[in-house]
Image (cartoon, rainbow, N blue to C red; front, side, top):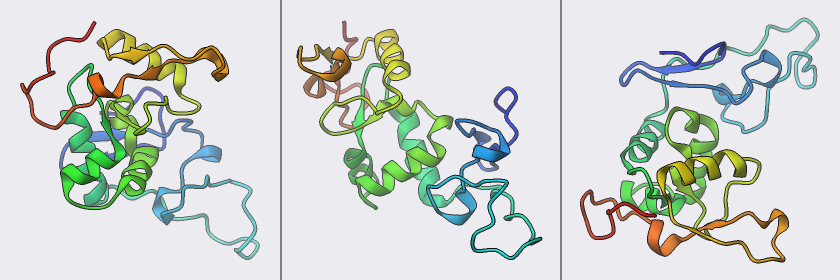
Length: 175
């Protein structure tokens, strides 16, 4: 199970889930193996002697916490969302920043647009893609104020937020 044309994928052996880099060229591959959010560069020379071996490959399996976060993201029904903090609370482990980091590094393997900021603002840099998913799934949105940058709507968190219980109140289709 690989994304089309992706070279730098991580495949989780336990679940068969593949995580794709946003840009899968070696120049822009995420430095997941080193636990940093920066990007690795083929021309990287600082901190390593000339002729040093390239960085080790990306690990074959996801960290346990990342797998747990992605499992929760998979559970969120279409048209509903959970905040980063909701996911951490549901897991009983970590916090919003840890969940956000997992989503930034590995979120392409799941419906990433369903794990959101608590204020309902769309993920910067991914607004258009997320908005397409929200409209397709019927996720409740609020109109953007006229003075907002680009007039991008926000999520209607009161109606879209999912409490983690399937079939509970508010799980009806949103239009």
